Length: 494
Image (cartoon, rainbow, N blue to C red; front, top):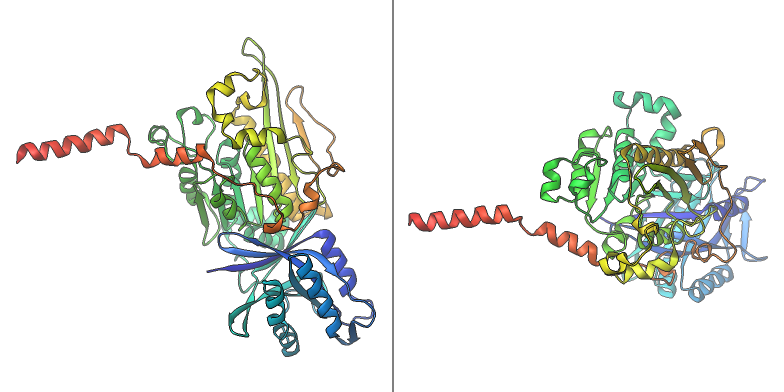
């Protein structure tokens, strides 16, 4: 069943609050442009630009109303921008709002014109006195017939991630004794918001597995695991839940991790999706768009570039990090550093944080980073060749990323941004956190809230992912031999 949601940047939210929550307590209204973000099971309206009313375009008389010339101007802007149209108005009550008969008539009456002009449904939003949003899509069900589809939630993305849920669609979790200590740390309201976030973990390696384990134990109801890779023996020193048998069979990392999470989860109705695709493939990309928040646990440039775009164009905050270990020629440790930061509007993107080399993205897309002859030509200290890791360091890096998430969602004492953090194991200190935004030449801020219409394609054929899945589908040699022997024995008996 398709779901609907709305997302907007903190800048847009603040602009709308200033406009719609009036000092004289009268209701007000305005229009805005939105772009679609279509995931596998959810469509999100990304609010891109507010269209404020001009003199003589609306009436404020307790209940606000707009005049035809305002609607016509807004429709014209939507058509010119290849965008959809959203209608906003305020209500004199807090929380998720219902609709009066007048509200319904105002929206459904303009749904046909909006669909006809833009090709997208009219999206309606109501603002409560406490800054909470409610939202719905007016979906075409027949000739001049439109049905209201309530959104499950509305998220506001910036330094803080704030979400208003429709409690009827996504019910707040009931108290559980298993989570008493967790809830006592930040209270039932913060726990309800955390638990109902749909969180994606991209990369089910050492750091990703630890993060997913923590999320499951914290009471998160729905987790998506996105990774195409298989378990190998060399993974077992740092991969949760992986056994010698898993490695021998070359099982998918997400399958092993999802089985473990089902044992660890504390939430009622826990859901874990194991997605055996790369985030660089269309299937993995669309799965990620169903999430409210993503963890980047990958170390290659192409997937990081894909996730960077999602953070801005699709307004899904991205928590990223990494581990770098330096080794002396004799094999002794020289250094170990790990980072954690969040890419989202109002924060610095991964490219500006130097988390990947944009010049290597096309190199990886063309398959060279998996070509032994190309790899052999790289200098020994090239970042692509640095694959040392230790479970202890993975624990530390995962912890730092999880703390970034808690800070962004819970905002203890009103603090939601810890800045980009770097820890140096040798000699043992944190750098001063970085709160600087993107470079003036960075393109990613221009993609904010453009969704599927950002005008850039980041996914494609990922041969190494296809190869990994293909190998898992093939029966192992010992099993094939046993089947052949079984068939031959039957024939001999006959």
